[in-house]
Image: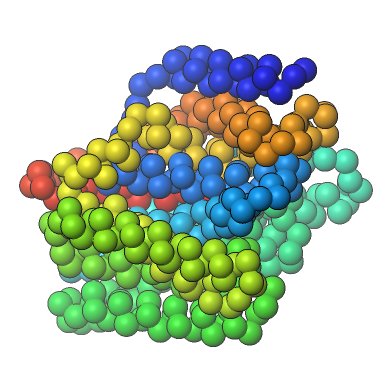
Length: 394
């Protein structure tokens, strides 16, 4: 089977599955809000991780290698997006106790990440030859999202899911703590103070944990990435109607490019400040999108249909790309040249992710949305105010 055959077959399968599963559902958080453009960020983050991991079998030797290798920091972008989208409903409800349901939050999170994750883990488990007892322990760790604590995840990317789950457990605790404060008007500022302190503590923990100073790491040393998203969510709750001017958007895009360049150089040199600078770059990127006006060119560009579709299936792309990578490489059909190799992995992964989106993820999302937003709580919002969805995907 030639490289071209694999690419053409993957493209054809993607289009066929997408056509068969056409139609959309509204994915909502506890407030029933949605941000335009965030799907595109998820797509870019997921494809960035695929691009970086392709280097392990289809290397680049020229200057672009440093740029491509740094695309694995898409995981940091996922964390900042999670912090922003998941904390925002809690932050917005600090003055109204009945606005957010902790039980519904946990149910929604479980329906969002567990079904497809379980499918991928089981496929990898049964396809991997290993000692039965050892494999079973790794399976249990994977299904309980605890592999990161032992350094033995069944899926190499599962460490980030373990961090996400730890963050899910923290959010309601922080929310209930803030709700116990008797002065509602001070809760948002108090939350900002607590998040800032936890983020600083996370950076101190990172300094003491050299093995976490690369892209991977545990929930304590990576909390500052979630924290940056949470701080941005607090700002958006405080000024929800604020929209960046065209000039400020341009400056913001420049700042994103500059900070990612610095973080890339720090990553190449294995420097400690790679993580915080990468977090700031992701913070700026998410902030630019969150505070873009509905009619801004950036918002319209990020709302492009194919890019939005890739955002829909980005969770599947993230979970499936390494198993697909191994299969193509072991079968001897993966190109040793970088661009064809990346296209093979990316397109085959997108095809499989599209199929499992319609077969696994979408039914779960449809079930989730039956109780995501009680009808009595849906309020019409002014048109200029952007809407957001807490569909954070690792």
